[in-house]
Amino acid sequence: MPKLTEYVKTAEAAEILGVAQNTLRKWASNGDLPMRRNLANGYRLFKRSNLEAFLKKAERPVNSR
Image 1 (cartoon, rainbow, N blue to C red):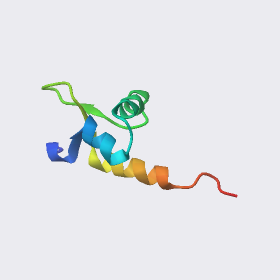
Image 2 (tube, helix red, strand yellow):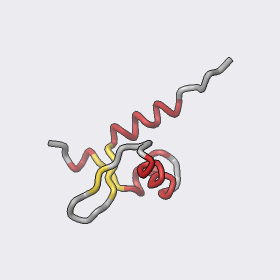
Image 3 (spheres, one colour):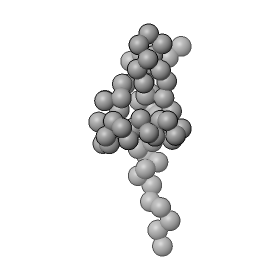
């Protein structure tokens, strides 16, 4: 069972990725970034390891010639 400490809320996740919260929400809605909901309050939760993987993917160059 995952620990709650493995997850961050929208504001912290946006800060980690260096984007606006609305951008993060859009990516989550589009399925570009995995997200879960806290059953108690409905908050979006982002797993730290998914954010790190997303950043690594974004660092890769796009077909440089």
